[in-house]
Amino acid sequence: MIDLKPLYEKTYMLDSLGNRLEQTIEHRRDPLSMNVASINSVLGEKAKAFLGSADIEMITDLQEKTKLTCPFCSAAEKGTRFMPEFAAEGQLKVGNSIAMPNLFSKCTYDSVVIINHKQHTLFPSQISEKDFASAIKAAVEIIRRAAGQDRSLVHHVLGMNFLNPGGSSVPHPHFQVHVRSMAYSGIERVMKQSADFYQTNKKNYWRLLMDVERQIGSRYIGKTGSVEWVAAYAPYHQKEIWGVLPGKGSLGEIDDDEADAFGLGIARVAGFYESIGSHAFTLAFFSSPKTGEGGHYALHVKICTRPAFKPLYANYDTWFTPLYLGDEVHTEAPEKYAEKLREKF
Ligand SMILES: [Zn+2]
Image (tube, rainbow, N blue to C red; front, side):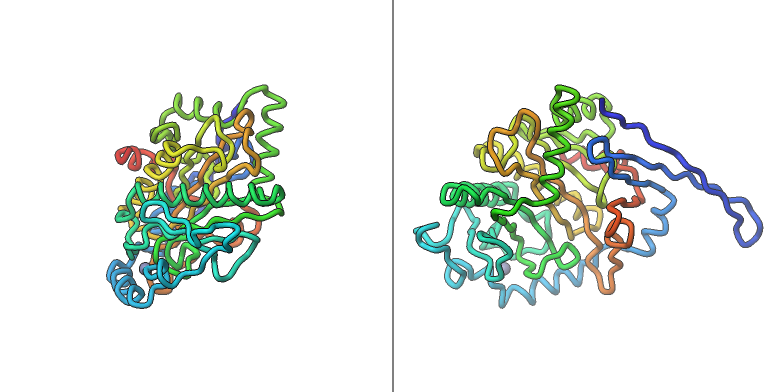
C-alpha cells in the first residue's frame, strides 16, 4: 500500500586526466503526493564548499543591533490590537507568547504570535519547548475564535519563518497564523490525496505511514506525547522533518497536551538544526479546515532547514526544479540526519 522503493541511476564521466568517475543517484517518490526527491551524497562535498554554514558572529551582531528597535520586544506596550468583538483583551497572551494582528495582512485574520516577547534571540536552541507550546496554544485560540465568529473562516495555516534566509523580515522568533475563507491549495491537495487513499485502501495513510516508518526504523526519530517524528522519505525540502498527530486532523481540535507535544518536538528539531550550522528554518502545519477529519487524515507539521545565515548565501532550496517542478535534490540521505536527530529525542 505504501511503496518506499527507490530507483537508482548511475552516471559516468572522465576527469581531466582521463580517469573514469562513477556516481549513483537515488530517486525517491513520496507515496502519497508522488513528489520526487533525488539524493546524491557526492553533492555533499560540493554543498559544504558552496553553501557553507552559518556565520555565528554575524548572527550575534544582528541580534544585538535588532534588539534595540525590535517591534516584538515592545509588543505588549506598542503592538497592534485585535478588534474588541474578536478579542476584548486586545492581544491574546498565553505564557510568554503574545498574539496580535499583523500590520500587513494577507487574509481576514493574519496574526503574529511572538513566541516569547521577553526573549530576543536569533539562536533556535534558546527557544524553549514551553514557549513554542504557548505560541501554538495562542494560535489555536485564534483559529477557534475565527471559526466561531464566521463559519466561512475555517481555512488556516500556522507557520514560522526564522531568520532572513528562512523568509523572515523581523528576526525576533514568531509564528504567523493565517485564517481566511479561501482554501489553501497545498492543504486541499494533501487532504484530497489522504481521502482518496482512505477510500481505496480503507486505511488512514498517516497512521499506516507511521507504522511502516516505525517498523523500518532508519527514518523514525521518536515520539513526544502523541506526536510522532520522522525524517521524510522523499523530502520536499532540505533536512525535512515531519511531526504527525494520528487521530486528529485540525489544530482547531488539539488539546494542551498535544500542543505541548508539538512544542517539544519543534524545539528539539530547531536545536538540532542549529547544531548542524543551519539556524534558519521554516515550518508549516498542515491542518484540516474542519474538525473531525482524523479518520482519514492527520494533522502534521513539516519543518526544514533554509540556506545558511551568512553574507551572499546561495539560495539552494529555490533553484529551478524545486521552485517550478517541486522536486528537490538532497546532499544527504534522510536516514543520515534522522540518526543524528534521534539522539535529541
Ligand atoms: Zn525582539
